[in-house]
Length: 139
Image 1 (tube, rainbow, N blue to C red):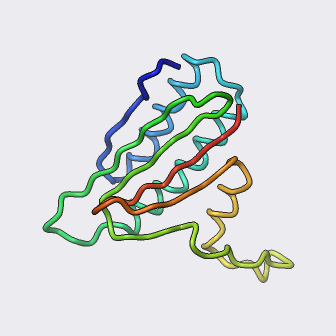
Image 2 (cartoon, rainbow, N blue to C red; image 1 turned 180 degrees about the horizontal axis):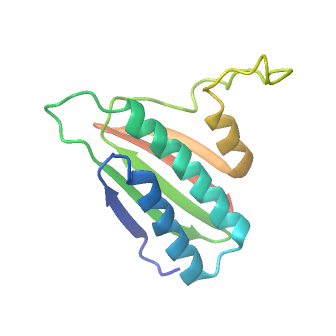
């Protein structure tokens, strides 16, 4: 991967996650990433974008925006996802307990658990009006 990061800007709509997945797959193919690395980032970005599109934007006066940046840092791939939606830190709370059976299972709240499983690190910070979610996966 070159010194300059790959970037992608998206509208937060129903096509955001598929477009981001295609973008990650193109980078992975170009850079020769292991399939496991590409899968992990694609899955985690899909999870994060789905939540952003569904819940982050409710201010009609502010045009919604999402930006992704991907770069190599030694043995790691770092992907930063930024959105100008309402402040939300997905890392601030623990995921709900796992259900003992399918009958007891509840929908929602398990995305962060999934992301933590696949990522080396998952961090959040607020920069001005932007949510910044950083995801790192080890090659």
